[in-house]
Amino acid sequence: MTIAHTGIKAPAALHPSVVAWYEAALAPLGYTKARAFLDNLVVGFADSTGNVDWWVSSAAAVPPGVPPPAGADAAAVLPTHIAFVAKDRASVEAFHKAAVAAGGKCNGEPGVRAQYGPMYYAAFVRDPAGNNIEAVCTAAV
Image (cartoon, rainbow, N blue to C red; front, side, top):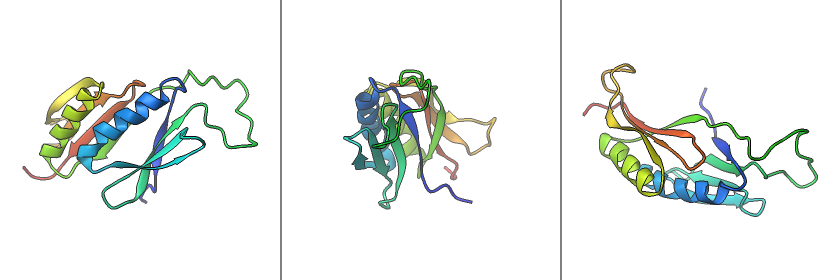
C-alpha cells in the first residue's frame, strides 16, 4: 500500500518558521508550497509531479466548529522522523546544504549508512521544531 499524504504538526509559535524552513529545505527534492488552509495554519507541499503529499500544520489548526481536544497543549508537539526520497546523491547533498542554510541543525552529514544497506545514502537535519528530517537515495552511484 502507498501512503497518499502525510505531515507533521508544529508548535503554533514555530509554525511560520517551520513552513519557511520546509520551503527552502525541500526545494532541492522538487517540493514547492502548493496549498494553504485555515489562514495558513495548514500548508501543503507538492512534489515535482504536483502531488500534494507533505503537510505542515500548526498545533493551533482546528477546523471551524470543532473544539480542540481536551487537555490539548499546542506547545507540546513531540518531534518525529520523516524520510524523503531523493533522486540521486547530489540531491541528498543539496537537501542537506539547503536545510542547514535555512536554519536546520545537522543531524548527520550526507553519506552511506551501511547499517541500512550498502547503497543507503542519506543526510539528516533537525527542522526548527526538532523533527529529524532525512533525504535518502538508494540508487547505484
